[in-house]
Length: 366
Image (cartoon, rainbow, N blue to C red; front, side):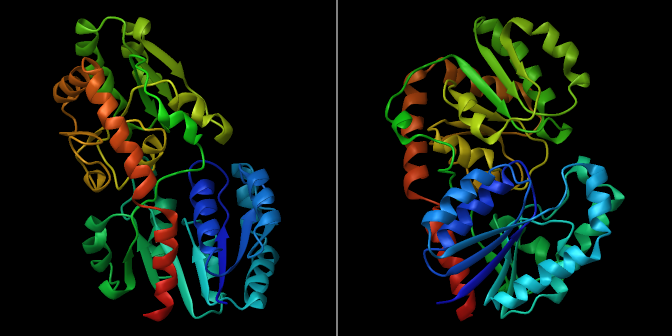
């Protein structure tokens, strides 16, 4: 049986779920040893699955849970030696990182295996992440592995421009999340007259565009609600939120994994008004709850969203077009119901973790 070592040292957000889903799928085909941060958000889930999956072994490394802790931990060379030694003792065929981490720069060069593999979630840095430290780290990302997994076909040329050979680029679309949802909830349709904006509140996510669109929408649907959920600085949006206060429900905080489903269950449409994007984990997450999506036609979002079937694509930055599509759907609950069924079909039948795992295993035969 082939052996795969997975290193994921992130703590929060979609990363722990992506790593979990991929590790579980890979364990159906190989022996998998996973090294995780002891502060990972879904630690209990990892512990539980490791007890029942005989091909999946999980160990934890004390990393950090604050910026200061990260700085001190990054200076501890013995921690890196310990991680590298444990991976090399396992003698993996594949060493795989499901999401980039700063410490990869130190660990990757010293791991011994047949194939080093890394999933790149963002080929280009987002505006708020394009600082000196991120750029410095990011340039090493594309020099560490033998092969690179990308989640969108559109970014193949961006990788080849960085000197990576096309045969070393593997396209594996972002699989649909099954982690959060209760399958029984997808069997029934109910109209709530609510929209959802979910995720970190950063400028490139385009919340300001959505709030402009909402000013138009509320004139025709006065009782509509926009649920805004996410951690981030909302100071620049306060004026618009105040104007729309009767139509806004704000949850400006970090959402724990176990609470995610509470925000997706009782809404009708998920809105992604992005002004910059690679792909989005929010789209497959919405599909897992049978929720249609209205998203900007930017980056590779058009590879995830089937325009007219699982939602609509709109011109990025065009709040009038966004408002038009919101109004069209929210006045047509029958169309939302039809799209919800399509979303569930995609969730169940396309972009599965099993297919993702098989593509990774095929790398050994190249």
